[in-house]
Length: 112
Length: 115
Image 1: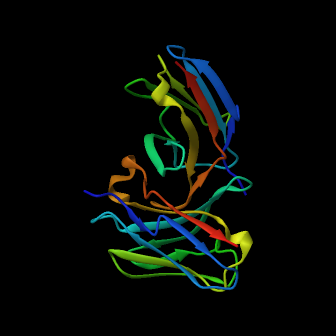
Image 2: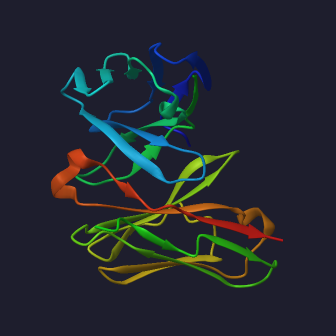
């Protein structure tokens, strides 16, 4: 069964705008990760936030985590056409390297 | 580093045939994962290995699926006999638990079509 659920399922914006994607999950987690998948390619790890962290930045990416609400958000600032991809959240549960359970993703389209 | 290498990239086979997918993880990564991706079900974890030992195979759909990791640099996922509903993209990923902050590294996947 799915652990993480992304929202929205699809998002279309203009280049330069910010994109916000949300993820909700059901059970306690060790960490939450965000991945990007370009069409026809494998997933690429973007950022990991641990359960005791609330916010993390990496370049134009900003991730927040609210464990009380079991939710996370990924913000991409000043989006570019090259950001067009599907974005997945994945929750780490279990032991030191237990399963990563993925949501179904948000399909982001950035129009030039 | 060449990353996680999967072969073949594409496989078209007839129902009932045996299919073998191959994966070479990143050197030094001692965890290896097999995922399946479909439009309907998204990304599903099939099985994962730590130090070449299968840890959790609860995601393997049925006995037609089997996976092995004979050494730290090679893993196979076998489907015998294959069925049309096995058509999907199969991903292999590897990670180093001591560097958990770096997440998983995925291969480019094998697109399997069973006709």
